[in-house]
Length: 292
Image (spheres, one colour):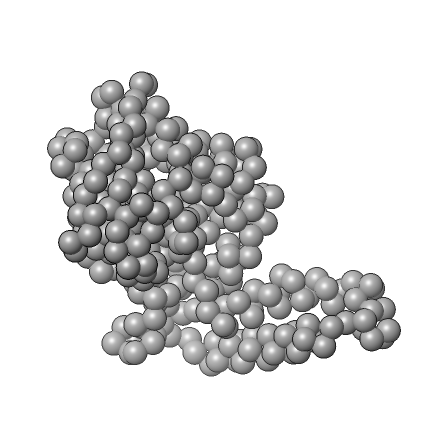
C-alpha cells in the first residue's frame, strides 16, 4: 500500500514535540506509536524506527514516531523512561487528531521504551492502548545485573582453562576479581531471599513502587495483546528473563493469555543486522492483526 510521511508538531505540558507520521493511503483503525528509548531520537539506532514505520505503513498501519520532551528536536528538559507517560499520551492524542478514524493504538518499544510503555499503562489505564510490542524490556537493578552476569558470563568464564591459567599466572585484573566476588555475593543473597519467599509481594508494600513492580502490575493487568521479542545475544533480554523467573511479582508472566513470544537467535540488542531487523518487522506486521 502506498503511504506518505509528514512531520507533525504537538504539545505536551506547554512544550513542543516533533513527530513523524507515516500515513497509509487507507489506514486501518489500529495505529502504532513508537516509543523511543533514551538517549536517542525518533530515527532509532541504524534507522531502525524509520524502516519499521515504513514497513507497517506499507501494510496499512499508521505510525507515529516522536521525540519526547528534552530529546531530539523536541523542547523541554531531558527526562528518563520513568517520566514520559504524559509525552506518550500527547502522541496518541496527536495521532487521533490527524487520523480521527484511529480507534486503537499499539505501543512499540525497545529496552527502556518497552518499560515506559508498560509504565504508561500502569499510570493511565488508557483504553485506547490495545496492544504492546515489547523488545528486550529493561528491568535493570544491581541484583538482576549481578545474577545475569554470574549465570551467563562468569559461569562460562570459570569453565575455561585459559581463565585458570591466567589466574595462576597473576594475569587476571584485580578489579575483575573484585567484581566477580561482589556479583557472586549479590546473586547468592538474592537467591537466598527468593528461596524463603513463596508469595507475591503485597501490592501495598513500598517495594511495589519500584518501576520493575509497576511494570509487572501493568503486564498482569493488561487485557490487550502483547508481543515479546527477545534477542538471543543480548544481556538485557537475558536479564529480563532471569528477573521474571526469580521475582515473585512476575510469577506466571509468561503465561499471559494474550502473549506472543518470539526469541531471535543471534540478534543483538537493537537487531542491527539486516536479517534480524527484517524479522522484527515481519513479526510485528503479522502480529498486528491480533490488535484489530
